[in-house]
Every structure is written in structure tokens, then in C-alpha cells.
Image 1: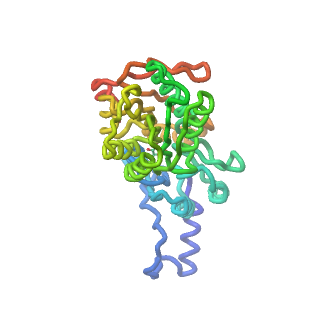
Image 2: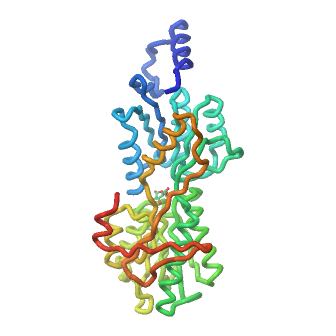
Image 3: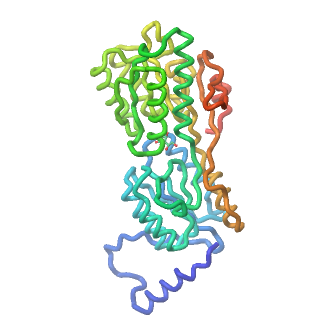
Length: 355
Ligand code: GZL
């Protein structure tokens, strides 16, 4: 644990200046968390609670950074607002935490606050989505998913599944319910789709953000079904959007499934955390879910343990992930010469998963 000399000096200065024990009731600054002696204080700025994936990610962090394990976790919910996350990081700096962990809502706009953390000599670990910074040393390391690869896997599965039904090129009429615009998850997944559409001549009818939520996913899907009369593939950038899209598809009297020749609307999604979505993948209502693993708590702990031991972890740590389908039409997908097996979804597979 870093010696809190700075913190003690600040308290002493406040005491001498009579600033200790503020009487101002309007004081809104987060009080430093009661720190257990010898514990490692981790300030975690989580971006929100917009999806089942996010809640599983928060749970993983809370389960890992417990007082019993020797940590003092200071948790701040950004409510999907970058301004709140920046405020949280500044509060962590003021509290002189040992480590800052940031799950950034969007990729850009972090330089100045990360410079403040660097100047305060507090290591910053980025988790899940990525940040786009002007100099690499503004964060110590990152752990998360390769969202572009996830998009490529989804599209390679779609290409191969459709080919088994003789459906190719311009006969695929696709809408993309995008994630939070400007997040690296949305940027990577959308990039994968747009590249495949260009490569195979798929008909990309429209792209609109569902903000990774079920309500917005339903609203956007309903609108797209009115705007485009020939949609036969819905590319949902997370499972909560897929659940919303399925509600809209049913309300429009259409059928979600895997038989394009029979007029089904084929739904492809990402995450594999929401139980209902995974059951829909088991029964074929959702054709494919590309796994996006939320259990970053132990991974971040491993990074902090490495730093505590005076070593330097890898700058970037990518999580390996599978993709699920119950169709059996595609047994693997090949991306850039690498083969990724498709996990054929069964109830047993579901029961044996970690989350
Ligand atoms: C991906 C993560 C995304 C999930 C969504 O790692 O950032 O944000 O795919 C979540 O479910 O809202």
C-alpha cells in the first residue's frame, strides 16, 4: 500500500488552517472511504448499469476487491455519463487511492483527467472498453475484449450460416442496432459488420444506436421494421438490445429464427450474459451470440498484484471468447487465418458456464 504521506500532509494543512472537520453542510465531496490499515485502495469508476453485462462486470469487481481480500474498493457509478466518470476520477485523486480502475463509457475525452492521475502518481488500469489517448503512458494497462474480432466472428458465422441456405450477397437485408455511439464496443462491432457488408455485398439497410438497452432496442427495431420492408437479419450489438428487438419483431407479426428461406428474421447478438437471451439462443430464436466475457474482477486483481510486486503487466490483455449457436450449421469461423470453434449451445453448456 502506498504511504499516504500526501494525504496526511493535506489533513495536517487543513487542521492548521482550521479547515479540518468542515462545517459546511453543502459539502458534496465524497469523503475518503474508511481505509483498513494495510489495505490496497482501489477507486473504480464504472460507466453505468445499462445492461446485464455491466451488472455482471460490477458484481465481478465487487466480489474480487473485498476487505477480507485486503482491498478497500471505492465504487462510483457514472450513470453512462463521461462527466460523472471524470468527477469520480478526480475524487479518487483527492482521496489519494492506490489504483484507479476505469471502465470508460466512450473512447475519447480522457486525456486531461488521466494526466491529472499521472501527475498524482496513481496508476490507471482501463477495463472493458478502450480509451483513445494522445500518449500511451496516460494509462498503465488495459484488459478487455477485442470488439472488432467479435464483430468479425458474428459476420463470419452469418456468412456461413446463410450460405448453408443458399442465401448470399444482396439477399441479406441487414439492420444494425448499435451500442453506445463512440464506445469501443460499438466501434469495433460496427466496423466488423460494415467490412463484411462491403466484402460480400450485403444490403445494410440502416444503423441506429440502441445504447445497449432493451427499451431502446425495442424502439429502434420497431422503427426499422416500419422504415425497411425486407429486413431479414438484425445485428444487435448486445443481448439487451436483442431482447428489445425480439419484442418489436413479435409485435410486428414477424418470426425470429434461423430459416431465411422461410422468411425468418435472423437475430445475431453479443454478450451471452442475460439468461433469457441465452435461452433464446438455445431454442433458435436468436441465431448466434458472440461471447463477451464480463468477469474482469480477477483479471484486474492479477494486474494490481503484479504492480504491487513491483513488476509491470502487459500493456494490453485481450480476453479469449467463444461464440454460441444451437443450429449446428457452422462449426467454426476463420478470421485472419485463425480458427475459432463455435460452441454448440446445450442446456448443459449453459449450466456449466461461470456467469
Ligand atoms: C462490452 C461492454 C458492452 C456490452 C454491453 O465489453 O462494454 O457494454 O457488450 C455493455 O452489454 O452495456
